[in-house]
Image 1 (cartoon, rainbow over the protein chains, first blue to last red):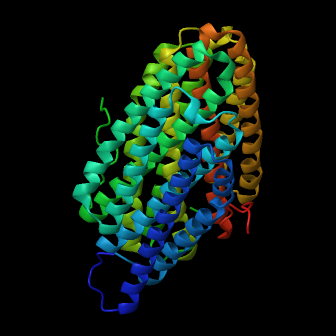
Image 2 (cartoon, chains in turn orange, brown):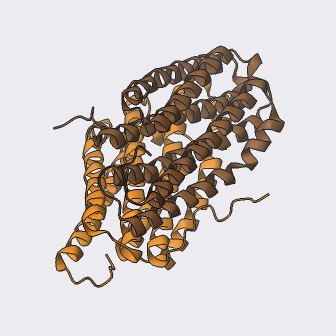
Image 3 (spheres, rainbow over the protein chains, first blue to last red):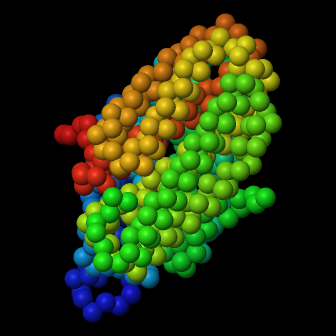
Amino acid sequence: MNTQDHISQAYNDELEEVRSKVLTMGGLVEDHFQGATKALLKGDTELASDIAKYDYKVNALEVEIDDDCTSLIARRQPTAGDLRNVFAVIKIVTDLERIGDESEKIASFVTELSVDTKSMTIYNSLKSMIKTAREILSAALDCYARLDAKQALEVAKLDEDLDSNFNDLKRTLITYLIEDVKNIEDFIRVMWCARSIERVGDHAKNICQYVVYVAHGNDIRHITDQKD
Amino acid sequence: MNTQDHISQAYNDELEEVRSKVLTMGGLVEDHFQGATKALLKGDTELASDIAKYDYKVNALEVEIDDDCTSLIARRQPTAGDLRNVFAVIKIVTDLERIGDESEKIASFVTELSVDTKSMTIYNSLKSMIKTAREILSAALDCYARLDAKQALEVAKLDEDLDSNFNDLKRTLITYLIEDVKNIEDFIRVMWCARSIERVGDHAKNICQYVVYVAHGNDIRHITDQKD
């Protein structure tokens, strides 16, 4: 956990175990997001049903890791860098769980779609948006694995590209909706999916911000907020 | 904080102060949500602009309370009920901040609407959905203020009504969209707003679940999840 040196090897092991569980949870939500978006692009309703069914594994890990964190605080009374690590875990698992939720939502919409997204005019924009979101999520988890604050700052910036992709896609969808009103329900389902994909980027950005916090102790959330 | 008895009055005061800040933050996001939804129903773009401008106050409180929590853990090494209280605060402020975000999003859409929602066919459904969401949020904060776990369980259930309202509204919107395609952009803006209102209900439900956790130590998140 890039931890401080502890006299107790057991304490080190415990911190490492929590961190390792977060990485397992990260891998799981990454798989779910990959699967849900693959199902969306391929029109694979079977895969989509599977994804929607297994979100409980992510949820169970969230509860387990939170328990580990409170138990670790109570027994080990972490301070300084260790405490920042544990604090970041408590926050990050919430973001990971929400990524799981968004993947589940995408998967549910896929099972309801009456056409393949491949036949839709916005297919390429959707594909490109998914590619960006997958890259951001994967890079964010990688930054957490290596506690690489410098890279985390770069990755967090990529979320702006995703937001801009999303806005473009929304505009395009509306244009096509006006021209092709009979497919409105499918267009709206795709719009909800796009929204979920954009949210995954937001959560990945949050993870990056916590990596910076662990490494440097700086809280960089909301740094661009307006002041009066 | 319904805290354990401590020899140190200063420790009690510190726990009370954190709790009091959470209630202040709760009051602030409640005001923002009230304001944003009022602006949506009245077509009040001036009010909407104000709401969008002041979200930074909520964000600043989030960072401040998180700091207080890590400082309190490091110096006071809370255990048992006190630790549950602090853990719940760390989780609840994230939900409160997201409610602030959703209110800001609603406010932004209001400034873009080209018609009053009052003239829209879904006005009454929207009004009713907003009423339910406000009640859930207010009741959830009240449960936290009184640490009333029994009531929190009841309030968490109300979120299902809101989800069902949202699904009805989505269906109605789609029907009217097909009939009145020229207003499509406004309909879609209202749909995003409805989605944000539904998310506020989800966050309020999360707060209720943390109240139960503080009071009884039971983690009731995801209890209805499927098992294989």
